[in-house]
Length: 164
Ligand code: ROI
Image (cartoon, rainbow, N blue to C red):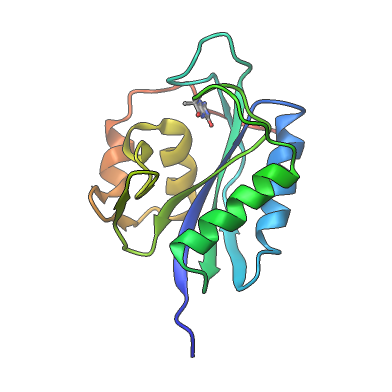
């Protein structure tokens, strides 16, 4: 039997109707081979944090996946989904139609130049930590310890739930 792993994916968009983009991407995640969605957070909106200031607000969510894919293969699939949703290469931290990041892959630590898990900025981004906490409040993360401690340390009140 192939071993499967619990992975957490961060989704974000601030272009071309972000709620629709994040919804489409969530649906697409469930179609990746060897992968199923266990849970998804609600959608949250917030101003661009940590990038150029003249950007539209983002919509973010986090999904829990069960996958038999390796971290690299999962990353490749996410990049294909980004392209199929029309993502163009732009400036670092610039606006994007869809951004799909591997936040966590089981308790694995990956430290390669172009690929780091846990995600390099996971611990300081309210738009990742709060939706992650919604679906995994008891999570203990490699490198970072208890998710609840990171959430307690956030001083951001800029995240709002998207009301449908
Ligand atoms: N800010 C928010 N609120 N949401 C994001 O998904 C996001 N992504 C980014 C930068 C530009 C750093 N800021 C963000 O890449």
